[in-house]
Length: 120
Image (tube, rainbow, N blue to C red):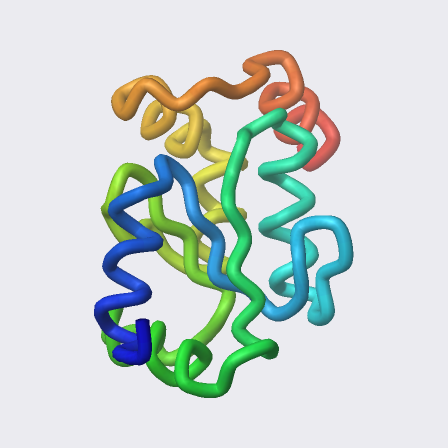
């Protein structure tokens, strides 16, 4: 599939949770990607990672796809949620838990609470 927009749409549609990031979930290559992947990993969320550094067309394509200028970008059940600052804020406020509950995404509620307690 050579069309980046079609490839991105397929990835977002075929996976419940997708993080477009610099690096991989096990080896992030930027602090912002590391922070979001770390939150998702700690909370036990199963997610697909797309390393935008591996393909320049995807790196630019995801910015065009979402009309959002930065990476990482989190998608849940086909919906663009946001980047690092938004995910951090949602995690600390409990909004991310609510989103996962609403979208039937499995996560560890105790781990989510541990993140909030550690950031009081």
